[in-house]
Image 1 (tube, rainbow, N blue to C red):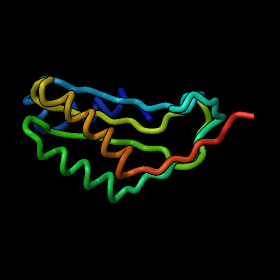
Image 2 (cartoon, rainbow, N blue to C red):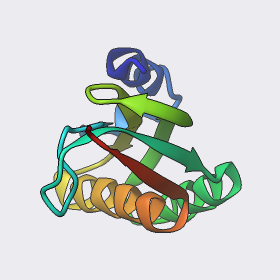
Image 3 (tube, rainbow, N blue to C red):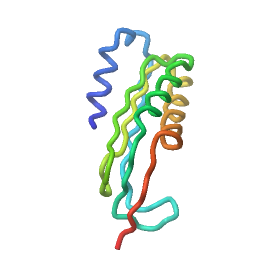
Image 4 (cartoon, rainbow, N blue to C red):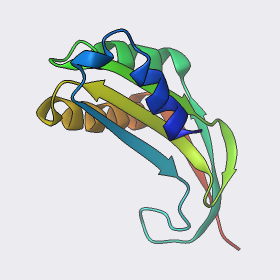
Length: 119
């Protein structure tokens, strides 16, 4: 995943002159679970159809011009990248909420995750 390349793709979008903001998210595997236990890694699977549906829905929000997503499926170790999301739109009041909503919806509806406890 390369956030810089994703941003460059947005800059090549025909509606780039309408963008006033680009926001990004890069999720990585951390060494602790949400409950505080140590993990050695995770296994994650993304439902590409669900992710595409979510992206198409979020793109309909006011001011959102483009959303790019890259994901990693399979077993990932601590520090590895899970998901990158880049949102381009007109103003921050539209772009930040769209970024948060996209990430939250994908985690809730478009991905499954299993953690592996550290030994």
